[in-house]
Amino acid sequence: MTPVGVIGLGIESSCDETSVALIRNGSECLANLVHSQIEQHAPFRGVVPEIASRAHLEKINTLYDRALVEAGLSTEQLEYVSVSVRPGLVGSLMVGAQFAKSFALVTGRPIIGVDHLEAHLYAPCLEGHRPEFPFLGLLLSGGNSAIFMVHGPGQLELLADTLDDACGEAFDKAAAILGLPFPGGPHVERAAAGFHPEASHRRLFPKLLRHRGDAPPAFSFSGIKTALLRAVQDGSHPVELLAWDFQDTVFELVERVLLRLVQTTGITRVVASGGVLANQTLRVRLEKLARESGFALVYPRSRLLCTDNAAMIGALGYFLRNTAFQFRDLSFDVSSKRYLPPARPSDSLRP
Ligand code: KG4
Image (cartoon, rainbow, N blue to C red; front, side):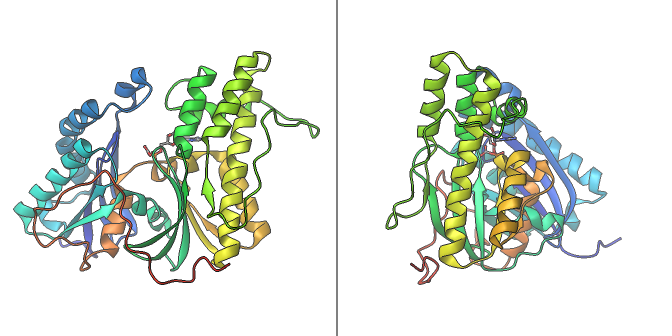
């Protein structure tokens, strides 16, 4: 039987998750299989590129077969393939790209190369949110922390970046300092939940610096991490309090940068995504900020859709069909760098 709608295949292998998804009309997830390599990398407290590429190679074919079975589909019913082509570990990206190229070669279907970071901002499409442009895209993950103005599919403008660590990376390093396992985010969150501050509680860490009016808005997490290290060396504070103070400071900074950009751009639609959005405290804080500051906030409710997954790659691929992101031949390459088109003449950063 012919399935109704356009069904696409999404492939993700940019870092330490191998994922294959089948998506209908860019909005419905028919299968989204994710194989995490965390256990293989945990002893090294970080992702080892060589191990990652090999693990992707081992898993990708099986995941594809399983996705078809789960969705009750066959290869002939898939109408396009979209694949993460940047940014990420090159050896890892190549595994996914090679798989997608083989699929395109065998089936003759179009192949679309997507930016993994941009795809995170399309994850809410799989929960019924059609993107409305322009919107501000807040991305907080293990490798990146940024805010984009999203003018349309494939049209990103970078408004704020991190000057040092990514937000998730800061959580991972904080966990190491606190003696908690890798990846650190969930463990720091759990430890922080064990501290119940009194109204009079004052954070141990220095206050965040005020934003200088003329400086572009930016994240910077390394100072907070150093403050944590000092507090730990001090030796007299429980892990729960340290984790709470760290998390509270990081999220205050996130809120500040986001709010500033909402105010300066006048854009009142925000899509937030990336692994750190799995954090319940952050979700609650951003929702409160949105209510109080009058912007609409969307983020993936499913934690699986916050972290790396192929469903979001398949969803963005749907919107990028028949654009310059659909490759005309199979000689394209992958890249460790993110896609940043030339800045559009735009008034997004009005003073
Ligand atoms: O988006 P993601 O899956 O991929 C990479 O960029 O690799 O994000 C992973 C990051 C890790 O740094 C992890 O510590 C962080 O997201 N993370 C969290 C939480 N869950 C995952 N950070 C804070 N709180 C969490 N609950």
